[in-house]
Length: 502
Image (cartoon, rainbow, N blue to C red; front, top):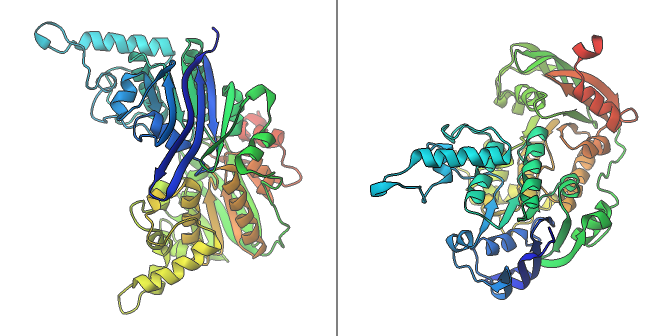
């Protein structure tokens, strides 16, 4: 099927007061094609999507759908015109069934206006078969995985005969198998002649799935290129306006004494016989596939989750199980994987978030003043280069990269001996990734012991002094930096000790 322009934006701008969020925005989505939209946080991607979705009205520029000028003033108008946006975290009604969610607000009816539930159910069954997935039309949305919720949103879009589907960071919370399923569905929709847009920070997914790539920087359109005629370094240079030769700025640190000591940690059904050390000045990566038990191990070490047997020691002193307070007091800090739900108080200010873990240190006579909070918060915000207009900025309004910096600032303010950081650069742009990696390397050079969990193999190989690989709840390999290769890590991540013994 020949690809023709389905959606076109040219010279689009959007201003909020004195802040220019978008200038000279440009985008062309073609039928039968998947177009990636990439750029650093703050590049204008979200503003552009919200204009397409009818959440914002553009200040200038042209917007055409199938060759006709459009000007959406609401999301309802955008949906009615055949545009569907699939967000990273879908918002389904949890108490309603899959069928009821898909037909919300437009139920099929029969005589006397009665809802035709069998007809709706049959249509949903047909949609699921068409997409090649098995989801029970009658089950409640509550408890469905993020991947299944996204499929339901896609099914809803198809039932509305959407011409344009926009997927905004859809893979951030998905496993490898779930990503493969989503990509199969996306390619099927492309082959049906629909126009798709895929927004992601993961270059391997962009190059695997997309036909073209549109790059934005500082609120403006930079270029659209065919995927097969470009490369990751070229895209990165367009995104950040410079060469990023040092995405993994690993510095040589002096390795000191053992700081964190984990011995024979066990929790049936989650992990078994976990033993390792982390030394001062060392970055140790905990690698493995999703579901290998990595996050469960570090949550148990920090005291968030229980473990049945084993010991955890900091500087030779044992930490009491299930006691985050004890872990913190002895110098342990945990930056969790889900920064929005577990690392931040989203509705609180940057100031409050940064000082949250050291509140007992800045209280005087039972009172914490804004001035004391500001002194501590400003120091750490400056050290980590948090881009916020003021300390009373609400954390939820910051970009993903700056939210990650705020969480890091909160824990570094406690002056820890060991920093556990789970997925340090998930969901943040390539420029900010380099900043986070630089910070980690500098902290290690200052003697901090760092335990890093990462699902990104280049990050593991680029930043770790040692790599511990997990598979099915067990450590299957310990590799020095010189021994860690993509092949050695992936072999250990996919082969349990039982399989190797056999």
